[in-house]
Length: 457
Image (cartoon, rainbow, N blue to C red; front, top):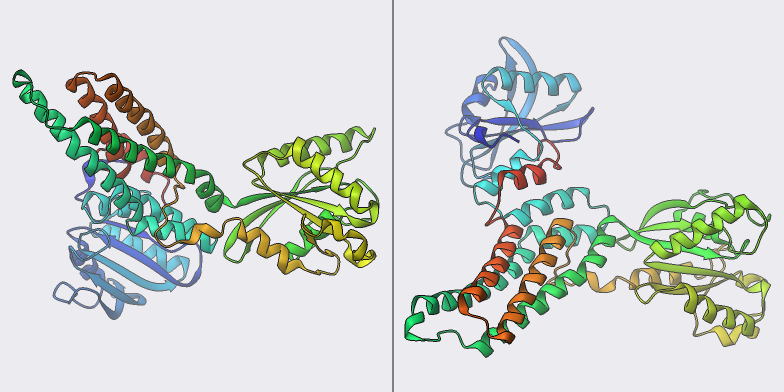
């Protein structure tokens, strides 16, 4: 992205490409009003900000479209500049014609994310807030939307700024000591500094720990549906998705590969994986599917072990559960045993399993709401209004580096190293935190971030 042309007036289609009922074209920059007035039948320079005006877009004497033009005057606009939004009919011809007229009259096409870049450069939001815009646009669930909104409204930035300010205060005292080193004056109480660094390190660790949850909320929580052949895995997947995604057959071993699909349940996106039935077999192709099933189990955050109640008594099932849990499930995973085909057995004989899992009939959709509720409970804590969850890989990597820097500060305090060396490590922590919010940036960093945005945003 060329940062030398930020004084240009830029334009772009902000709605999705293609034909629709309405399309939105945006302009921003010093000449946004003047360029618009060259093609619009009404004057807008003297209009009040945040007002909409009906008129025609003209190409000479030819009427291109009747449109609604909304005026945003600096600094009260998304970019902090004079901005215009043209709502026209969604004809591809009309969209292209209006853009061509704007270009002919002095605008240039915006690059990916250039509107958001200008909002950042003009101080309308910090870097982490602008990055949240892309997450908000791509949010497929209530959970992802809520996390992105919290970040875009500055929740994450506020926490980073508090940490940075606290470190900055003590860094200033340490630096002041260096100025009076000959007088052997100590301005920074070392125990207070130890307490502060521990506090900052604890908060950093908390943010880092939230990334695993944030990542699955953003991309969908991976759920592996596993079990023996004919346990009803494919039937359960089809019922959850409300479509015939997987082949259902009484023939054992029908599913030989991993079948994947996503669905939003109670505002949370899940990625379900129907895997091959786990059993001992001489079939090479089926064995490949079974190996993939185990691979998927290792990748899953939630493992649904589906058990056919017809195939074993309660004691044998309980013993198999314990073995599977001990040998297959990690501490980070959520394990949910699901006892299927309750319509085919006498449940009194399986009272021993009552506290072990959920009883359902996938075929008849019996107790399916209980299973959905159990799934969504696994991320029930994400929705706290004041909770910050990390979803951005860049933020995660910076916080990991910051953690290492804080460890050096802690070690330096313990070893009572000289103040100038201590100050170097504190400054590194401050620099890293500043990279998250954009107080410290480079053109390469900004170019890499905004290149992944949509054009027109």
